[in-house]
Image (cartoon, rainbow, N blue to C red):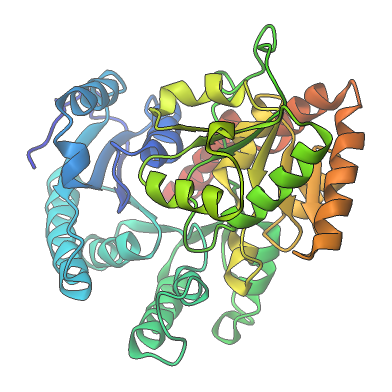
Length: 407
């Protein structure tokens, strides 16, 4: 893929190379990469290296819109092709290709900071650090190797897991600064044996949302009680638990409906809805661009974010939580994931399931209906989002890290 944006003449700004294995044509790339870089681009000259999935790249309209958005922000985009299969050789090829391109960009543009989003980009970034002396910001996004095990994708005793955990150690030791998403994970990472006694520069920056876009509507749309769900449903997302809670909600509100916003798993979603005995006409299944998501959340009474309570999820901060709360919508989640319990129960912005038994679900739905009677609930959700998950606060936190690294 050729570079899709033009250069920006403001060469005096320090050059930063941002590497993401997520594509910018995906909603995640737009909300969790581009939005941050736009907020920082008046202070830094960004080179954005991303890996785009062929199906997304084939959408010329979307590609043109994203390229223009980046050009307007003065961000130079260097898109590469993401390869999926065969899994290990494809990934190794992407790492090699990405490393070569990253080194070329860093050397040509005198990059001073290389910002790596997750582990595979961090491997590329470490090569840049060693070759050029650029500072390495390891933006972990979670405990990736443990996520793969907990999601049933890798065996814990396997060579791939052991190799990646070894790479994780090297990246944490070599990084000039580490970013993690939750307070729960920060304490765990600092306790790793090879980091004990080290002064690790670490910041906690949860996944944030652009609250200028994700905001309560001027008037809430009329309609039935709607349990909403945003994003993926596979691997460690417990979509069946959301459906079980919906069935309990429907016992109290027979008009209740399901609104699911999802890009790629529609057949699986319909199968699970049917398997749990929910009528097909109760489900509205939508594939949406990221720009359309706030209007869809505005139709929700409650948003679901129930995730498998496994070790790796102490480092998880679901993007959908910030987006729900920003729109004034409470969240139904679970207590063992990241800082979710503190946000939902501590801030009274939703309900956190303590287990996945029938008794726990019934109790959670009872608490949810009581919470929904609170006339200040929507305002409290919004205020909590502004305090904890504001994109402006996230941008300011990254700006402080960049300044420290350059100093």
